[in-house]
Amino acid sequence: MSSGGPNYHQPQPPSYAYDNTRQQRPQQNAYQSRMPAPPNRLLTRTPSLTPSEAKALEADRFFDLRKSLVPKRENMWFIIFFVLILTVLIVFAALHDKIINALQPEANWVHNATAGWLIPLALIFILSFPPLFGSDFISVLCGVVYGSGVGFAIVAAGIFLGELANYFTFKYLCQGRSEKLKKTNIRYACLTRVIQEGGLPIAIVSRYSVIPSHATTALFATCGMKLWVFVVSAIASLPKNFVNVYIGSAFEADAAGKGSKKSRLINVLLIVATVVITMIAMRFIDSRVNGVKEEVIYERRKARQTAGSAETSYDSSTIALQPQKPQQERFEQSNNV
Image 1 (spheres, helix red, strand yellow):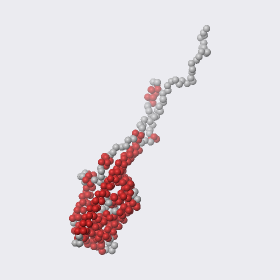
Image 2 (cartoon, rainbow, N blue to C red):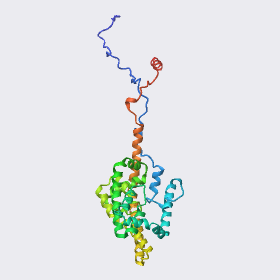
Image 3 (cartoon, one colour):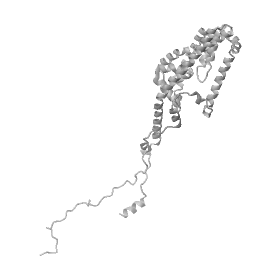
Image 4 (cartoon, rainbow, N blue to C red):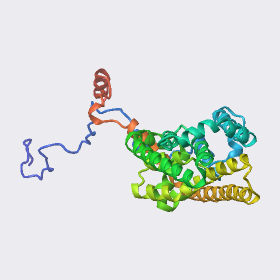
């Protein structure tokens, strides 16, 4: 007989203190930032070559005279300077007798004055600082006034002392300018790398090249070349200046009627030897520059990548909190569940 009351002996279904059967929706932070991922996380590819870098990779010479003489806007200053120097050399070669005769009274006064040799030495010292030039002309005049022996001693002393002062000046006053130039000028950056890695051999070869010696001195100083390396290279390159002194002494001998075929032959041989040594030195420098060019340009590209990442990175403390959805929209969504 069944009763209408509950049967407490009948098995009951299991019960839980908390209803976990309902699938819970993951809660979202209402103030989660909508700021995208920092761009520096996405910038993993090395930047492409710039037009100047692509042009530098295509060039096979450190200094191409033909391209530098093309009438373009960026070449105008070099063309003007080149034409000016060439004009001076042609005029001096054609009118050297008249020039020497015109300067003969002043030359005699310097020669006869007490400690007159200090005058050309001081002029060479001053002209050893770029962008000044003209020490070669003073060297020729020293050959005219003092002859090849004493004249070369004066020129060597003036050049060595002037370039030593030039070295210390650029080392301590122009280091910052050099660092900026290495970042903007690819050829300068490559030449700097070659000088830093080449040591004494590349220093001597550079000073025998067509690059003016006082310009290489400034470059050596700003590149961090050691003092003893510079001193040895400067002394080793002094014979290069003997050519100008000997030319001056030959001019004086011709003007006095004492010139001989032997002296003229020696003069020509010295000029030819200077040209050949310069060409060999430039080819050697070109090969070394081409060897470091790709590495220098790749470092420039990586530097741009690093700079771009630093400029576009975000600090988490500066990201403004933005609500994910308006409050009314969240209430409507909760009521529809």
